Image: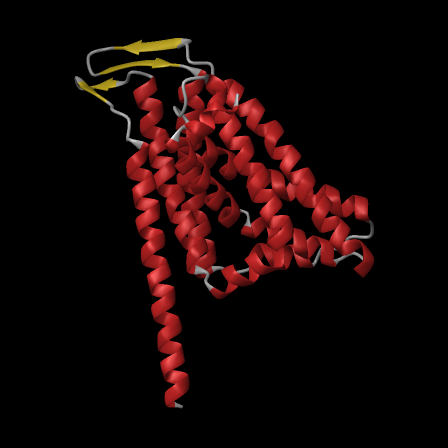
Length: 269
């Protein structure tokens, strides 16, 4: 089952996906912290850790369910006319609507973060929590909402990797477990880093636009869609990995430049 880890492409996908899972999980960490802060001090750490553990279990269960639907490749309905030919399967439907959701989610999140900051955080802060059980229930509900784009991102990054159907699922589960463990250990540090460099989160949301578009084209390709005698091809994942790596390199260079300029300004003052 772990033979997939001998594949270099699988390692690239795993590292990239783990990074995106952590960045996309920042909002989840913030909301969990807010929910836990409503509890007595001695229960806050317990609520945070158990909240993340339950979030990991919930995501793995959702991954198993969605991966089962994606595995249903046989078309159950076919359209064939003069300008469109396509075989619709559960796999293509999940990928298509998942891509549409990621496009909507990423653009709306970017809009909210740029124009309407902390609206949802303020709403959650006003909700009182009286027990650990209620806090964990609220955390699970919050995580379920955040899990959707996380799972669709995982499917988009790993679909088609490996020779066996379960190879992609193994990569997704490993990435989820690693990202949750890292968030448990470095939750406060990660949150402070993103607060100091909010452009990293905007960059991750921008990646979701690329992944959403790739899911849509992948759905059309797997459905053997032909529009006006033109067959829709799949986008090689190597292009996506290169775009993400190049964008991150530019962002880290910008961060170093900004830090250097701040140091120069401090010295001059």
